[in-house]
Length: 266
Image 1 (cartoon, rainbow, N blue to C red):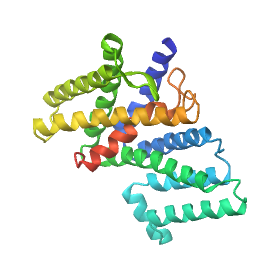
Image 2 (tube, rainbow, N blue to C red):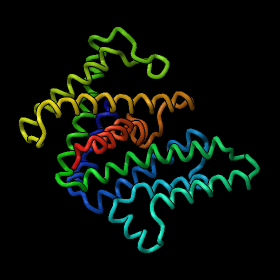
Image 3 (cartoon, one colour):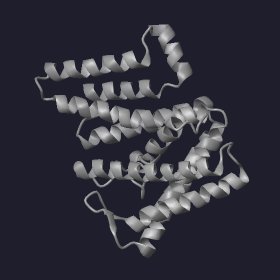
């Protein structure tokens, strides 16, 4: 627990200034974090990052992360859109599977492409959300929902948890903790709205908080399912006491796209 707390404090001290400042330094930090994330998920499948599939996956992830202004510059320089570059990457992966005579299979290609989408889309929206008008407020909202859901679920589950939520995937999670996490997140969002209000009705805000809390917990469960499938305890060990990057950002990878798809982030 001591190691976990120290790591959390140090990581927050390093991460929060970048979040507050935003702009290019924040985007570059997200690129680094996403690179570690794609390395972690490929390692679960025993695909090394410096292999041909690893390099193509890293390239595709970086393409997906490009903010709109960067995407336009790349289009001007290369005449290729983001979608076209991703399609080229997929074609190269399929060609590679033929060249190595199916030692890298079609299933492996699908895994790499889906992993790139899983990591790339979530972290793209981390950059896009910060670059939006009042982006810092939206990032704080997302972090608040994720952190209070996580803490609320943990403490509620420990105190009242009796019914397992999904024992095959995450044995320690309970239905009571799941509901408690949502309740605590809603309370936190209400407090935030009283201090620094968003331009939405109370009903809409509470609904968004509930759905975001549910999606955050689904993101956690999805990552747990991936780890259990590949028989790994943590996605990595870069954060002592916490595991890997995906272990810490799994909920945000679901919540941030959701907030944008709901047009809460404007």
